[in-house]
Image 1 (tube, rainbow, N blue to C red):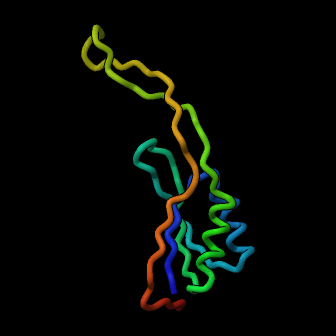
Image 2 (cartoon, rainbow, N blue to C red):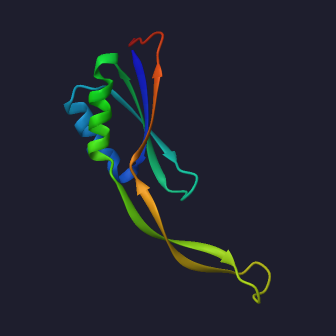
Length: 110
C-alpha cells in the first residue's frame, strides 16, 4: 500500500478530484496555502494499492499542467521614503503538481 500526497493548484483540484473518483480512487482533500505566491492550493491524500500508483500519477499528470502567470513583485525603490515599495510584473510558472509517494505499513478504514 502507498500513500500519495499530491499538492495541486486550487483551480485544478475540482477536475482532478472528479477524475480520481471516476478512476475508483478514494481521496481526502485538504485546503492549504503555498509559500511562494501565498496562493491557495489543495493537498490530496490517496491510499493506493501499489499496482495502481502509476495509474493515479498518470491521472494527476493529465489534469495538472504547468502554465505561466504574470504576478506583481514588490521591491524597495531608492529615493522613496522608508517603507515605500514599487510593484512590477514578473512571469512565474504555476500549476503542475508536487507528489510524494510513501510506503504505508497499515491502511485502515473504520
